[in-house]
Length: 168
Image (tube, rainbow, N blue to C red; front, top):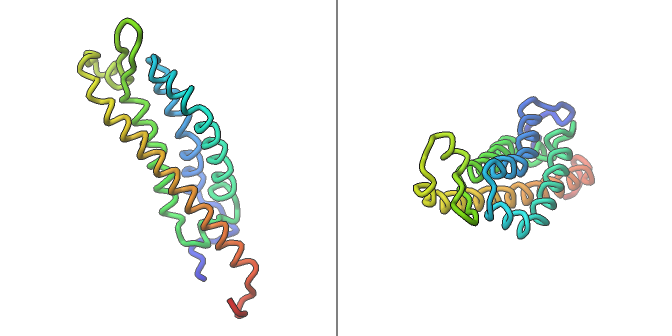
């Protein structure tokens, strides 16, 4: 089994990817909270428990892999792939938070990006589908990260328990 990175050393790219992984859910909520309405309420009420569990799991993954001296992804050879996945996760959630307009009781609220660009709120309702797709992409990338993390932990344990040159 080939190790692609020095397991005793942490790289700056790993640290930045770990920070990016941790910022995904807060970025979504912070950007969506700028112009809050019923969509944010629904996101928090229906997805709140999942968001808390996902964020706690993101902390565990970040500290066991990206911030650890013995990076679990180094054993699987997926270090670069997981760095990219961490950044994609955060980018997708930040995009969803930035472009999702919101609905209110009286009138729709603009998205953060739409407000910055000065777009009328009626023209932004087409962005809802794009925001949902970005939210789905962020969730699917996070599932991919979790699956890779579990695989990396299993392979790291196997690499520790199997003696060099011994039977596998």
